[in-house]
Length: 173
Length: 249
Image (cartoon, rainbow over all chains, first blue to last red):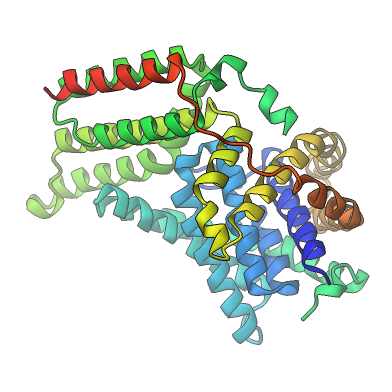
């Protein structure tokens, strides 16, 4: 696998992550709470964790956050999305590599969602220099369990199907 | 990049991206020194004038307010309301909140948020990437491939502009059918969605060689940025300096 080909696959996966997250517009969220979203882009992060090297996972997360920041929410949301994205990718990668016997992909996705929401709120608390923000944590943690379970279910099915069809087989470590 | 660039008003790109960035940073830093309501009102008026000057629209302001509201304001207000509630139940300094100070702080943070977004929404991505490429060129020489990543970002934006319509047309329709069908259980729906996603990933990965070729070709267009100081840049710099002097004098 050449460096350029790996780069092309990373580009494709980032595009897929951003496009797949658009599906959230038509998928009903069980309980609509401000700041809570399904996080379908996480499916691609989990696929990357399952099939690619860790540095590729980080590249996908960082570039995806920057592109989304530039194209939609605005770049000032970048500290929030980057902190959440990177920390959850790191935690999910560690759990997938070291504790995959204990946790299914659903479990890993829930852990990732919890880490993501907690990291974003901690960054908000640091920026505002206020701890009152952290009162929102229980709301986000409960919703992370639900959204993590939904994206985890889709991710698990997707990873199985990718393995079955031999897609990304060149990358399997 | 064409699709993204043409979305911006051509007059917006008149200011040099580098000078505009320096001015944006200067204003963001200055906003942190607003000490009272009067400063905030003047700063708001100046930001509104800049928004009009850069030909940004009401939709941009609303979009900013919305994202700020979701990411910062909602958890903060929730926390404040909970603190006020707890303060009523159990009065004491632990749950007391200085609402004036909180409002001042939130407004200052919103200004920084707004200035950052205004910069990115009114400057073409191509100009920003070229400028960053130039600024970070020492890192490239030190072996950190910033240019390569900037090139990838540009490529992704281009690729998304090209494929988003097709994605919405095909995949939205398929996914929409699944979620509209009330006879399907949640598990079946998620399974069907997973099938759609896998098919999409599989199809898109078939374009790996094509994307690889295009990335290699796009690498040929290297950095074009040179600092430009014309009448517009001088006027913008003077405008900012005069405003800041008047505000803090």
